Amino acid sequence: MQFATWNVNSLSVRLPQVLDWLCQNPVDVLVLQEIKMTDDKFPHEAFTQAGYHAQWFGQKTYNGVALLSRTPATQVLKNIPDFADDMARLITANVGPVRVIGAYFPNGQAPGTDKFEYKMQWLKSLRAWVKEELLAHPNLVLMGDYNITFDDADVWDPEGMRDQIHCTDEERYQLGALVALGLNDSFRLFEQPSQSYSWWDYRDFGFRRKRGLRIDHILISHALKPLARACHIDTTPRKNERPSDHAPVVLTLDIAQS
DNA sequence: ATGCCTCAGCTCCTGAGA
Image (tube, rainbow, N blue to C red; front, side, top):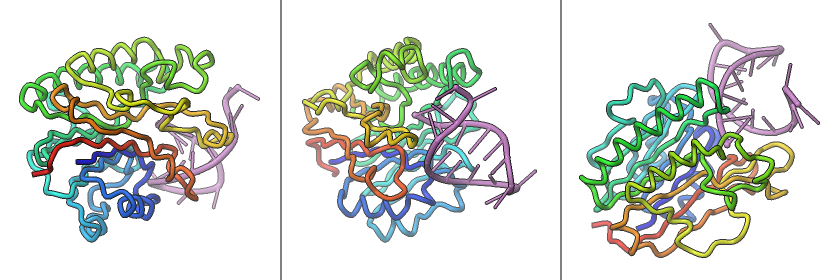
């Protein structure tokens, strides 16, 4: 099975690129973040025609997530249970033998702000819930836009971004604690090119100048780790006209869908 | 640089993203 995550920064704008990408990359599961549309606007018929079942959790203007799958998704859940949230950030479902969580983690703006505090609370709630999910579903994939780098290797300018958002000790502590529940950064299970990033600023030719961050991740449970065969970031769509600022991350697992 | 892009929306400016 292949799994992918992509922050599309408006599905209305990016739908043709997503459909084109799925044609070229017929993954079994694709989770999307920042679809930025209400549920009534979601283009489910286009995905049906492309051969995908869709689950979606939209919101006006900001956020919004979706889960596309070759086979129907079951036991669908929206957002983190027991965490009151007026933002649409997370969608979960069973696809074949795997529990899939697609998440758009809060940005956090800057340390010391209300948004940063919200990010911390969201991360703590996520961790408490994922701990339970792992017990119920040993085959678990947690992927999405984490808005957190693991370490300096994920940052184009580690010195310049030290203690800045996406790179603070507090965020990395939370990410580490999440991993410590029993997850693995599938990307680093494999040898990767230097300067591997999943996001580049639109401004100042960030992509062309290789000024990026790796903030989109696919974490997999210990049960799935021995089945991981490949993980890569596909920078092809970042070269499109009107690209998203994020690139898709793709994971291949040696596991059958049914 | 409180800047630079891009997107949505009570759209010709502002807020938010990262």
